Image: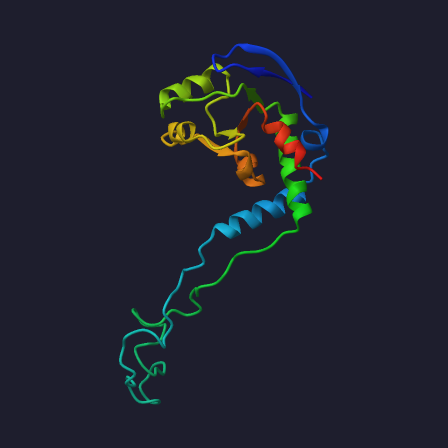
Length: 208
């Protein structure tokens, strides 16, 4: 697939780039994408949710009434989960949600996600540029000029740029990352991708 490289003013630079088929033209594997996204979301969980059981709530352990003959259920104390303020029955406990995934599966998932976006025509290439200061309005203007859209734009840089990143912080529909941070979830979660020219070569060089 061949793409034109745009200038930040929206005009074509005249440069054409052929996307590497082994990165942007493979047969997508939906199950690999599923596994990678599930692992990514699971690894974001803190796992710190906790509820007190009947051994931890602050109530007296005095028996409320005699065992039999009271005309109702038998209760040992107010700590029972059937009482308001009693212990939680089968409540959450701190746990680890982290899981592992084979590196080759993760790579297959990432390449599948990129291939989907390429097939849908959702990838735009822009010339490398610098911003002298964080300016949200300027970044919005660039995205408008290159017609990147206004729905969940993923802006991928070859290397970190503080000014470009800071310019995007107040834009809920724009996410700026470096090529080192790209993963299956952020690709699939984005509606369109904007690559600064050179990112596609870095991605191709990392495919084994």
